[in-house]
Image (cartoon, rainbow, N blue to C red; front, side, top):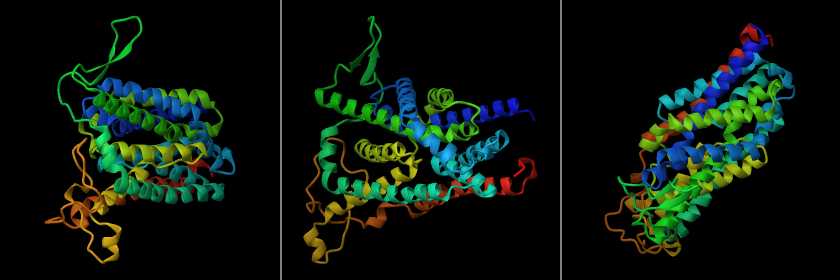
Length: 394
């Protein structure tokens, strides 16, 4: 097959990956805002597209360089034929995760496929892979402990400050007034000052998550094509972001409807806490060129937040005295937004279940299993293909 048709196929495959990234990341970013009727789905898609592009254009090139040139010693292995195969395994493995209903890590899946190519050809940069792997271990642990501290000591204060109630039906709390020459934000007539502040916080957090997604996820779509040197960084970023935007305005509507993922199934306050912690870690890692797994970091942050909320029923003196740690049923869902919660150790422990009663072991096991299986499919499938299929010529 000639180089030009292969390049077209590679770009089309990258567009498909970008399209799915837009569809899967808009829900976690703006699901809470849409679910609380703060903004519309169209506004959510527009904001996601804009801030994804900003993240991809500013910090994203660092991660693209890592995956496109730093993960292998010789970039000549990034032939057009091999890149199509890499993107195929990334997209195929992610499809398995989506079919199973488990949000898998696009970064881990992409790194796995590219590393498999480097391993099969003997060109894998083990130092770079080791640095990425170390951060993949450290970052979720960091997310867990930061969220745990917030859950134990600061969550009630944040909960009271946000004070947004989900308002179904009617006009969204925040909309755009296009009646004048310059569009401007307008707020619901019945919204008080506290609700407006909370609404702006929720939207701002969504924009932060969109930015964080752009810094890390753009590389998953375009890095293999960039590694060939046939297309420049800026055109690929523009193509990838355009594909993401199409996904934001189309298939993302389903995720915004169901809010069916680890972040948006939480109450609004918890979603904000997890989003800030996870996005901050992802942006920090992207700035040093590390492709971060937002899904894994967010999942561990959720667990950490629940653990921190659970331990509020026991004081440190009670632990030293040997009291059994028990938790409230609301450890994850907590109080209604804006409702004051008791101080640490003040909760009524009568008829309170143990911590294990709050978690579904089978669901937890399925999520952990699939978050490892999906990258494994990409990595093993790509390695066997590049090692034993003759058409790649390695």
